[in-house]
Figure 1: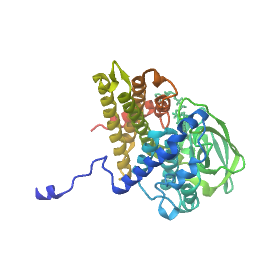
Figure 2 (figure 1 turned 180 degrees about the horizontal axis):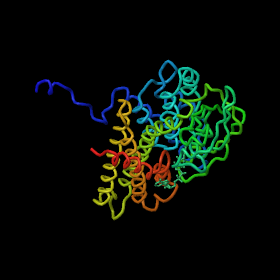
Figure 3 (figure 1 turned 90 degrees about the horizontal axis):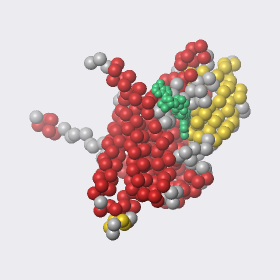
Figure 4 (figure 1 turned 45 degrees about the horizontal axis):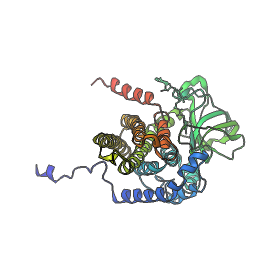
Length: 392
Ligand SMILES: Cc1cc2nc3c(=O)[nH]c(=O)nc-3n(C[C@H](O)[C@H](O)[C@H](O)COP(=O)(O)OP(=O)(O)OC[C@H]3O[C@@H](n4cnc5c(N)ncnc54)[C@H](O)[C@@H]3O)c2cc1C
């Protein structure tokens, strides 16, 4: 009994270490001073402000899990989640640029990269080069492994041909993880991941999408016309790109969950400020119990989503399976973000429907959460598949 009592219980999911707390404060300050003044302009212009990118590197947000030896912050996956959440409270477009860099590109390299690839790419990814992750194509989204981008072997080289669609950071990136098939008859066993530098002859960035939300985040086509890369640019093994893709996305979508809880928290904060100020019937609308209940329900849903996202991130750092917790966290937080952003517009009344107030943008931004890194249907499919497989 005394031994049991002497054991310390696990800290709560939301209690932060000193380092995590300091990181969160630094991001919060940065988001207020550097991101906030640019949000509306970037959304209107549908452009990421290029001046922000070097600052994101300087703050250490672009190489969170890269070790100090390569110039990174040497922090945890959970820290990436905290950073993405904080940035997304102010602008989910900035959140996703940082998210893709850390939870997809750097995460895939950490897991599958050779020592030579890490030594070559990590110093750049930590200091000045944005990364992008290129799996989707026009004809293959949810069915990602139906991709048609081809890789032909010629001696020591691979020759890549095809097109990628919907690539986040496409415009800003210098390094792309591109998935192609070495042999379509092999099905998913032909999929291989390649590291492609932007300057490689035959590689170009195509059309940029005009979008409903996260408009400052670039979403582009990539065009590969006989792009030659050496064998040293294969990430993981030839024919095992499906593992790189699946495992990275399983973890990466926890970052999308973080983007969504940040967005929802940001919208709620705007609404709380507004309902205290806005007067109707001779008093602040915050005095009406119906409004108070709307605020309470939103805060509760955000907290539930946050606990799911934090738990999935901490499980990942602990090396435990995150397939189902990650899918659930992304599914739930993206749906909470939509509901919360919508209710916040209701609380702003007619003003909420205009571009004068920030909730209209967050409502548009929230929509992407149920689509990328696996639609809500695909998350449900993953969750159900795992539950139904378990006969215990
Ligand atoms: C802004 C943005 C950024 C993106 N960034 C990236 C990126 O950086 N890298 C990248 O590789 N991709 C990226 N994507 C692509 C994204 O991951 C895909 O759009 C997404 O996976 C859905 O694929 P799809 O658009 O082809 O839709 P589809 O797969 O055609 O789905 C259409 C609808 O059918 C449903 N559906 C499809 N199959 C099933 C099924 N088996 N069961 C039930 N329902 C099903 C879906 O849930 C959805 O509602 C991005 C997309 C957007 C819009």
